[in-house]
Length: 154
Image (cartoon, rainbow, N blue to C red; front, side, top):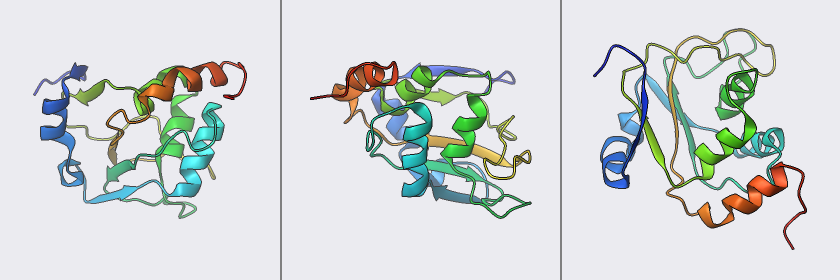
């Protein structure tokens, strides 16, 4: 492992060997983003409804917001990341694309995440991943076009 944070593209075999099991996620707890937040996430990103069909995993030391009790999910991570860190198209590509990524360090915490309800800073989230296995890849270009304000698919 390196001391510096680095995210690298890996082939599918290596990705599956490292990340296929939710048990590989660091932290005391592992949970999936509920369907309601997945649909909110699609809306936030400007994706057509039901574009995301894969489990969106999160792990950490405490799954709930310490202030309001809301379960922290990919929605909170992405809404926080859209505040100047990443753009919508990049996030959509990570969720729906065929390339797989891994971080080369064991994270202490995911920096910059805030609860989408009460906006308190969230400490202790350790990892997040998506088991898409590219089954939505064929539709990725149509999703990107729709996100950019293009016509809805016929």
